[in-house]
Length: 395
Ligand code: SF4
Image 1: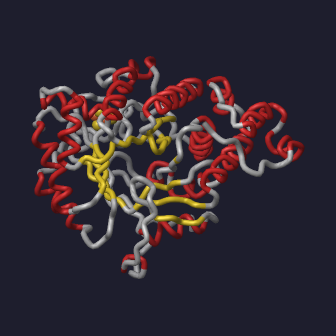
Image 2: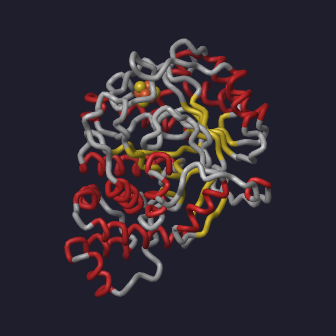
């Protein structure tokens, strides 16, 4: 539960900023009362985004002050072969789309070695549901990462991938999770359910695990002691009410398991999907998703703006709309691409650029590990003359 807002502004001033319509929500926040589904729906539909952002920022500053977190990480998407054919997905291999690939262990090793000079603390791995990959592949994948990068934190496999891994293993899920942990798995990245709505599930991704199934896997993973992260994919066919419902259900699950660390709202990218006719969510939508997540999830410590999905520029603004985390250096990412750069998997912000991104936004950069322990390192990466691969401020 939230402890309310530290040093709240006087009510009269708050009413001028928030507006009379949303004052009951502001009063709940001051009192440390939990917002409910109706509040969430109103926050997703009010025209007064600045009020939503202002309130979210008060909560964010109560929790984290001016601190804004980043991590040095590397993403590896080990295969894009997938038998789920989700309508919102541009990543999986298809005719006229991306060519199929599955990374051999040797290729994974090479990718890790390419960045061996950068002291990353996290490797983030997800992939498609590829029925050709045997159980041993997943165990060896984890072992390979730990061999090349001893001590790194491995965040890998959505709940949907875990179901496939269990199918291959032909063992109870809890047993599989313990074996994955023994091979090197440290935490689960969230994702896979997109939005907890039976209607959206049926329309967009009915071959995948449904919401109840997803929550059950999350509970089992919590019982296995695996830290978890949560996401919300927005900007496709979901309604504002379904977004509110998603947050309420995730929050209830967190009350139960207490294993989630961060919520990351993920903007839908229509390019290359079956939903190409749907316009891209706007920066306005991105900021609202971040802010409402911050306000609704009183039992989540962190809300992240993932710069690849939201752009570095919106992420800078998001640090004043409830976000306290910007994700990390990434290096390569194949699920979505920066606007206008479709197919270029090289997507990186160096540590220097992460610091610049946060400082330009007026916050204090804190390098963290996957569990938000502060990382203090002095390495050459900061002093290297790096070209700005992604300009942080538009020319
Ligand atoms: S979202 Fe995941 S499960 Fe669905 S098609 Fe894409 S890779 Fe496969």
